Image (cartoon, rainbow, N blue to C red; front, side):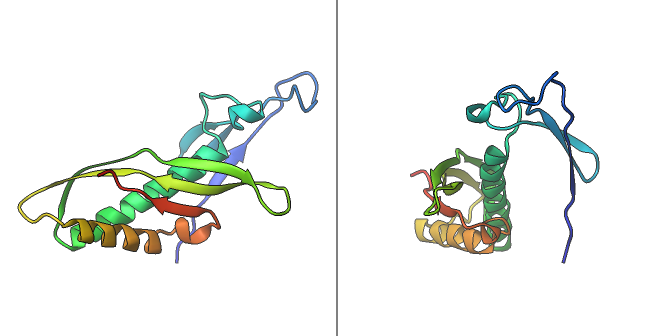
Length: 150
């Protein structure tokens, strides 16, 4: 098993602490010292030039799927030259009226190299296995759908 740590730091920079006026900017410091400027989403009075938790979740799901897919492809002796994804997360209200990231769609585009190339069925099976084994997808209730580019 493993542990993963992050330190989140926020400090008020506004004269008051009203909902409409308090600052949302903060910083994530990940193990090893990587600092990530963060905020709430722009729709919630945050800054678009900083990472918000919702985009971080979408990015984490996409990244985890990609890393798992690459591991599977490497073990099957397929050579992946490039992997790109335009992941999209959707927030909706649940049955209790609470907002949540209910759906994330991944749109991976993969370029294979080498002489041994996977069939469409093998690619689909690798995506299925990547989804089944992605640590982040296994950690959330969000529906994750993979729609590979044709």
